Image 1 (cartoon, rainbow, N blue to C red):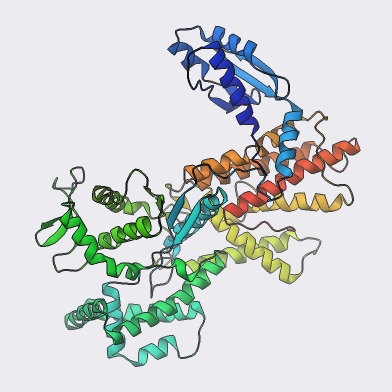
Image 2 (cartoon, rainbow, N blue to C red; image 1 turned 180 degrees about the vertical axis):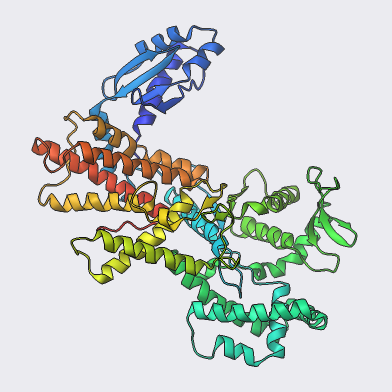
Length: 591
């Protein structure tokens, strides 16, 4: 099905044509159209265009009004203030546009595929081998997964990359500890298959024991560092133990991602070790091209605008003076792989805002080397910190970082209690309550994250997250379930649009907002801004609540009005369902 031209686009096109006619020779006359409380839309661009053309803005606005093609879409247009235009569209246009969206067989609701779709590699959800995932891993996973869904929906080819920490000093430390305490490997990991959570809990104990020895025993530290060299050299025995750590950790990662309702495939996981074979060549290419230079034995890239507290330049260290490779060498090798092998046109890194300087230097180095050209963009979708209710970084009472699995379990437990409490007529079985509780709990955690602009910190408040009131996923999920309940109660009466009907104010507001879905998805994709989609969906649910309160559906005055209001509800529900799916959130049919 062809995409549906939104009412905003239709009105914009008519005003732009009238402006061009009123100002001959003016190219791309933008009326700056916005939704308005005074009318359906307000055009604010005439003042600037009049100033540029040395014309009177009110007179120019009046000329535009005379030239605007009205009738099928525009019902009224009037000049306001110093030269604004207030535009009201016809009820027929609202319903016909929604009807066109509703007939989309692919359930895309008329959302077009982007004309400039390319290939985006998204680097997100970067846990570390042999370490439990904590609250700090939440945002990268949730935001990254939402961007995968949104970009794929707009027609982009998306390659997922989970850049897990599976290399470096800590593995020399771990492997050496196991080598000297062989009983610990089978004791902690077990010979039988254990759950992902148990495997990681055991691995975590191993990590803490080896770290304690590493920090307190200089001789062990020396042996551990030698073991890193063995690992990098590909010593078979060392690699075998390392592989076991990686395999056990993956079982755990998958269990956490499964609880987060995220799809993770094995080929998507390409850790630091995946770029080992490229590191030497990356360094050689940078040095030969003059992008990197040797400084005090290390291979570095310098930047005029990056200086430390002492005013001296802070370099990006690609290879250390002892010959070891830094994170920069791995990240630059990953860029080479993603651009030249995966043919990416966009690189998106969903990484903590505290890594901003590192990635600015890495991207600039890649540009100087010619690996990022005009045809490839690289962007860090930087995110803020998860805070506790007290506004401080989220910690346990003991001051330790909160385990992600514990946080998700508590969210599910709280949400299940809410679902059970709301089921006053006991229509749901215990199995259904648990299933809905899981969907509501995980949805609550995701939505709280995604409804906040990524670069801002946000407070993790489970009481608020699972509330039925306010800007929460539970509010949206209940709005969806309420519509489904009404559609079921309607029985044989089906949703049917009636463009000939006059709409009430609450119907108009709901219809106009539902029609903006495609534009919101496109904007969220272009700006890497899932919070804009979340805000749109909350507004949609709020407008439906107003509509529900003011416009009786099943008890409307005429059969046509019943069908029309069922239709408005149906389009709203389908938009909520699709929009929430793009955020990675389920919408249960009954709650």
